[in-house]
Image 1 (cartoon, rainbow, N blue to C red):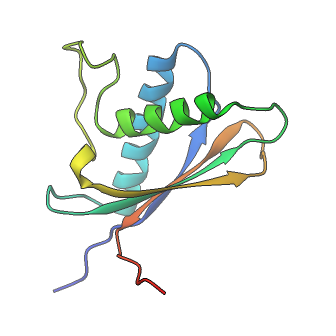
Image 2 (cartoon, rainbow, N blue to C red; image 1 turned 180 degrees about the vertical axis):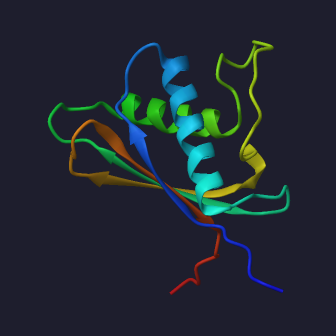
Length: 127
């Protein structure tokens, strides 16, 4: 039996308002990469998200960084229009599947906000 593919890397589009439309673009970019690589996640899969955000240029407050991380997680969960809305799209990854989120600073490259990598969660040993 062949090993399942887990890892994808997606370029995050430049952030633009309205926030819900940006979430929709993130969701579409992840779906496109999943289809291209032939990756699919099951409910029992535990995943790690690696976000590399371009933080140079304009100073971003901690609140702004937190909001971008929340937007990405909500986009993956299919929550595009907010928690009280009934307008949802198909979730890619559930919140309970995300075991670790790693946030890194990245250099700005063109019109992208950064990069999102989704990989299998591997528990790191304590040193």
